[in-house]
Image (cartoon, rainbow, N blue to C red; front, side, top):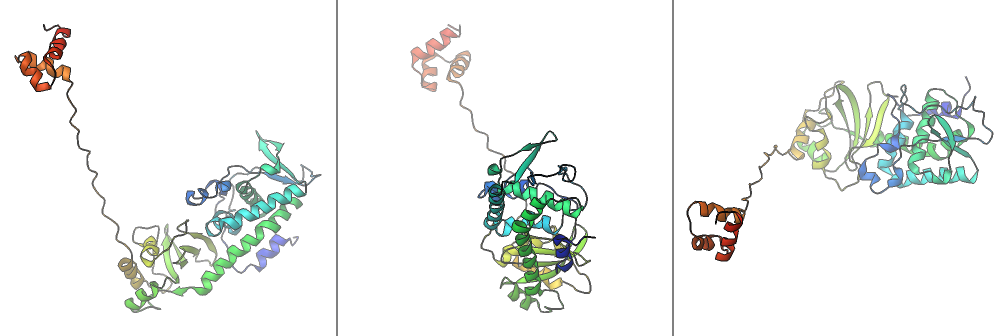
Length: 338
């Protein structure tokens, strides 16, 4: 087997990643908290970057469709790096676009299944993110990746993937276990959590036990499977806010998608109690109040006619509805009552 740079990096990578089911068009799923400030990240397009004299038989226009277990380390970088540093992500994607333009590299888009040349000056950061994910799928499936795409991948994406890896390593190195075995005293644990540290705990998500490394200050969380592989690194809250323990811990209250779980000889009774003490209590569901019915004003004409039919004379009607007698007379005449 040929030892490519991609394969070599896999062999020396310290953080191991789990590949889950394919997830395409990353740039079409970014949170609106981010894209409202960076609309160039939104894209539902994917492109093909080709060398000047490419061979379509060797380098085909493969379908970009969800297939296989290709959502791993690099896919997570493309999906979640935007939550950590959107400006840097956009900057690297724009550098890649400039590189394509300056080197007269061909760009194509599929239209009705056929390749159509595309002006690279019209590419966006979101377009490049989807395109890099397509390249990533090809690497994992061991499909052909041409020199131009491999070069762009190495120059402008791999540095981001490396930083994404380093963030996970940093969380691991700086985390503190919050099990009962490490904090047998509840008050000591509460005092520690108030310092907004990076914590490590065992948790349950969708019926699966994981180890979590959670940065309370930023809500960044890495999830590690029992196998030792990492499933993801992401921020629970996409927009950076000033946080305190009450808010940071509410994501692990009973009923949430991730909750502390006693596992592998570690228990988390004090951590559960601390979450309950520090986190705001969910508000009870409020009954919807029915809007008050507004009294509709009665049509003066109908009021005049009704009073006349009840036997009231014109003067009395005029006084009641505050309409001159001549007006009352006109209404009754037009109604054929006089």
